[in-house]
Length: 113
Length: 114
Image 1 (cartoon, rainbow over the protein chains, first blue to last red):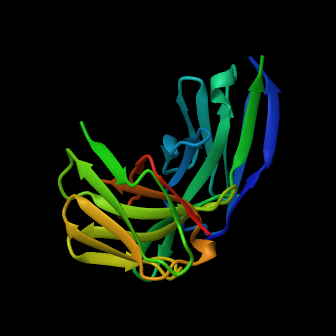
Image 2 (tube, rainbow over the protein chains, first blue to last red):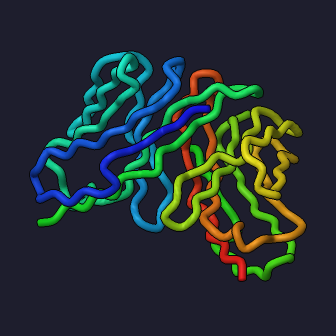
């Protein structure tokens, strides 16, 4: 059964800092890896996703995937107060009836001025 | 443009009472639909998914049921609420199933069971 763990649980960084969030998973056969962001009281919103090993950059956000080490990460360059939110990683998992998405428990990020 | 609506926005219900939550997607034909539950401060957990009208698969057993009576509608319900049902219920849609395309979430329904 797919297990997804995030670290750290929470993070406080100054504006302009580089922020790194981590996610580990247990099923090496997973095919889809994504990061979602959830502002307080709101629904999660997809940030980025990746399917194969390597790196993908979109604006200030970069996602790294290393399937061999069962690890992927999100890096936020020049962190802004508006980036303060709950960050959820998600990994696909095979079930008897198809694929499902398993989310980590989240990392709370606070960016201060 | 696609829009996703959930109703009601919030509910306060008594233990043992019935519940029905709804979700409607407009602007997208035959989407895959999902129900998620998020306890306060807790992990987002997938409850049900549906890839077509009338077909719903359960992912986690939480004494809840789901139905898809129309292509653009997904209903979550139970006949008897438990205290543990409190939380944030989110409906989501995506296009692809096998490769887990991006899921787009609705605004959610907050449920408090007393």
